[in-house]
Length: 370
Image (cartoon, rainbow, N blue to C red):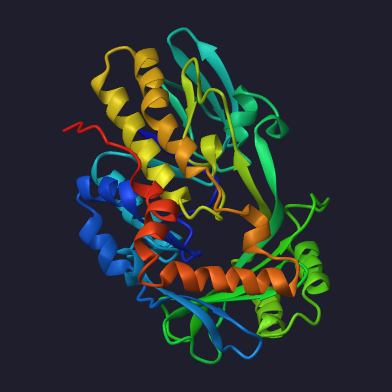
């Protein structure tokens, strides 16, 4: 197996991602769960805060058996990537960093792959795992606009100084006008993983110009309160700053001939669901299992679709209210959001809330390919 990656190496750091439900089961079957636990962040839960930082609601990690908004295992994206890369290298995978696919063409029962370094290779199967803006998908299936659905907002991620201690809490602040700011503890002392999000109709800006994006945030969050001035300054200084639209990817088919897609390239659920990592792990597990157990590749790709699609459909269901709930526009809507969280974590309603909102991560029966 050869992995082609446009970055110069495994990208370090990044935001925290959830390991929950079936995704956690996949890591367990790979023999990596204990190592993932050792790398996980120590967090108390999520707290909605006011402009002074006072907690208005709290949802602890333990409230929903480790399957709530903050899961039992939260790991930095870079740490998870390093874990998976090291394990795959141990099993014979070759990595070609600083390279991307620039062309694909059928070649009998193989695919000819043209790479950005000018080389070509013949392969049995191409797997595109290059995110919601997938270049692989564009080459084989068509323009991004056919498959990407905007959800009505944007989110920026970056590393920031923690400032006043968060005491292990993921602090989330809502401001009228559909603005959301958050900080959560990082793994290094004195740093936090931050985000600034805002509700908006689709905007026209250069996705590859971070300075333009930072200026957009400064305009949107001017006078928003809480820690937003410090977070805007941190966004200006961060070398891991990233902003993108909140979107989902919907496709009628994930495979065409000898090219297939997994993860966000095929079925991005958006950060609003908290299931992007689980979907990527489960999709890759089923695809690998079917390809290695089925003698006919087309049958294997069809089975991948049949087995994974029900889980994808469930995982892409947005929380009630979608973007309007995540980024309320008015003070009344913010208050209703906080009141709803308080009700969800109350002991009488906690079992019902778990069934309604936090059981999707487990909604698949994984085949045993051993």
